[in-house]
Length: 332
Image 1 (cartoon, rainbow, N blue to C red):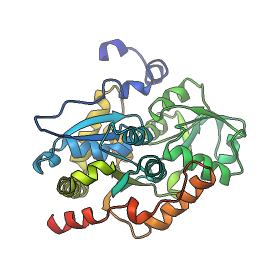
Image 2 (image 1 turned 60 degrees about the vertical axis):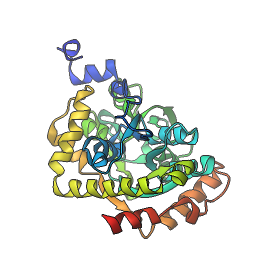
Image 3 (image 1 turned 90 degrees about the horizontal axis):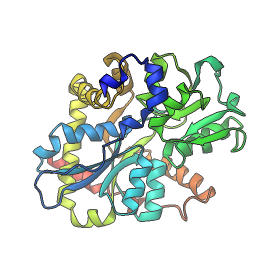
């Protein structure tokens, strides 16, 4: 790929090739010899990178667990794959989990991270937009149906007095938004790292607001009910590996960042290690069950119910299996 891009500027490459190169060829990979590898779904934006590191670090293998990877553009796609029973486990934020539980009985195993600092609303720099309300009449690229997409529409935009129709929502995968911004086919984007950091460092866009002000965005690792019923011991060992990941994120962040950095650069992205480490530092890996999680999820469920996106408020005692993490910590 490199020789084909020789002579192109970063902007030209983004505008012509698009960021979809990141997902190309990242479908299911064969696992090592094992009767039933875990079909692990994750998104290739920054939210999925702790899961990517979990797999590539060898920490799962040390616990006797092998996986088959299903890498996709965003977490809501993983959730849909799980509802269709194409994937056993996957990671996505609260609103997507609520939808998955409603449509497919998906079960939360743990909150693995908070990513509110990684999600931003950004606008093309030359437009001089500094407030959400200034997006009225503008073209805004949004991953419709995703957690960030729902939060933007239902909370951030509405909170600024913007309803659907007040701006033109352009449906787009997160990994394609930066190319669209460079090509000026959209005015703003609602997306996540590392695309925001690249846009900022390249002088392509400026930040209007980040999601942390509105939502810390806890990200779940969830599983299908059938997988949970048949794999209790494996889930405990799997969560022990997540505790190992947390330790490495804290004790050796440079190693973690370099591993994930190589993933992005191998897919055609050009960014400095410094830019990438800034983006990576916005991910807070803390596997566990936050004490304020149920009220937070209740609020999101009420929004989704009001919008008629779910049929009922979940029973959180059934939707969450906190006992697996308790056992993992006890045996870690």
